[in-house]
Image (cartoon, rainbow, N blue to C red; front, side, top):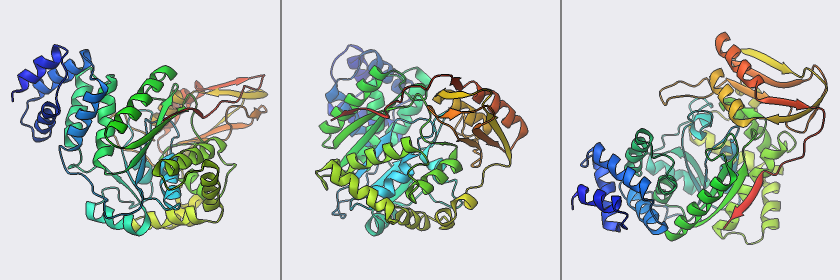
Length: 437
């Protein structure tokens, strides 16, 4: 088989075979196909989009381009979740241990943040010595003992995706929906789970800002996953404003701990999405059939302390200190410099723009613009007021933290543009817009 023939076939709008996708993926993973031909292939796929069957074949080929995890020795249902990313979206850190408490296995593979969207691995690493590079044999062992492990992608897992992903960024083919779907699902398919929940966000802080684009992506993800034999559903969720009260790595971990320890009122939007995602994961797993019973069980796991205890076990297994759970306000110390943004008039918080707030967090030091940038785990924003909250002149709307004076000044200047006050209370918004099955 010759790569030039595969490129010409796809350039002509013809449907590729599994063997051809396997050939491309193996060549990308092993370096036997040069970048210029892989780039030409990606552009051909961009101009002549893959159909659902082709998307599933490419996903499968990329998943099989390296090692795959095998949890067949674990008799429990195995379920994972993937979010398309947003601002303040630290749901995963609370979700994985909570769902594991309900008797299903949650091997959760996560990534790092880039730009205004945070990454789960960075948030976990705000806990000193927390190890995300977990060897495969230890992942198996931890799942067997705890039902949960949160880890980063190994170099042997879907290596073709890593190569093609970097080329998509350099060739203007990032927006191709089939290529997005194949990239997301190849890693999850290689992970060896039975079912998968997708959180597809829309709004200013989301990858897909328009609702209709998010809806199309959600349908493509669900249909492709099903063609691969995975049970899958997608929640389309709101990301026009930050989720929860915390933006920044240590901030978001502290919020996670406080909520799992039973503080339901700390961030009602975060708590509601946490339970909605956890319920859907349990239903997908087949372990539970009734949503109301599943929700009641999950709330009980939070109230009786099991969820926090599971998180405590997980972080101890992965090298961090239990003090993160026992004394979170002391353990997760914010950066030394602080600015309080106060209301300049009476009224209501009408809107806090997610993307602007997220970019302000990056300027403060909580995120990165390139993968080489270092993160300040104590930098970030704590939202004392959210959309719909009444404010009086002088009330603190948000506290911003940084370790560098210049970073604090630039972050504050941008964040001010994210906040809009009004005399009239805004209408409430729904976090979960739709469920795609």
